[in-house]
Length: 241
View 1 (cartoon, rainbow, N blue to C red):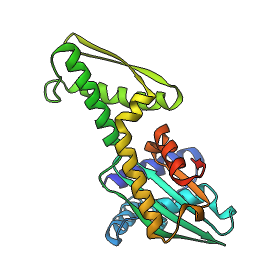
View 2: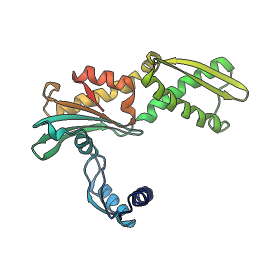
View 3: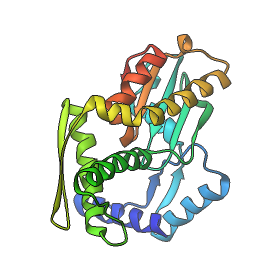
View 4: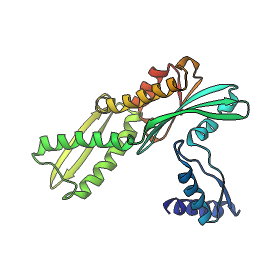
């Protein structure tokens, strides 16, 4: 139902801007989607007047978007760290054929886990400085603002070496300068877990990193510098976004 709402919105916006009727679409889906989930996707599109003519896997779409087909006979790792899940796929391109030869990941590890780790550190600091800890039940506005500040923090630390977070609750204040090095230490074990899965998936494909030609990092979580650093160290390849 939610997908139908999103597709209807996309259809309406595109039709308004192009003055053309949209009745077909290519819709990407996670690589681990089963037949039932794919059918739900097709049904959602049909309910708003769109025929889903192709359901390529998201790693395939990422490889296409990065023009892997221009590198004849190449193999790519697609590292996809989203908000709620982590997926990694090995994509092989031969001529006009693109195959996913291995997939792996963690269904319960994503950007939200990184956010939760940062929020715990901010709450600990707030409690240390103010002798009380805000609760989500009593201070929902504080928690909403904290999550917004964390998103801003992740973005700013991708471009600079430090950033400041300021939060208020019941007249008390937390003003904290966080360095990229601190941030990296806080989330290192989470990022390393994705690297372990990436390495396992390459091994399951009977490959090693010497046989990988391209490394693509997609999904919002992959914008964190620690992800790029660890991925380049693991693969020995320059990461492309």
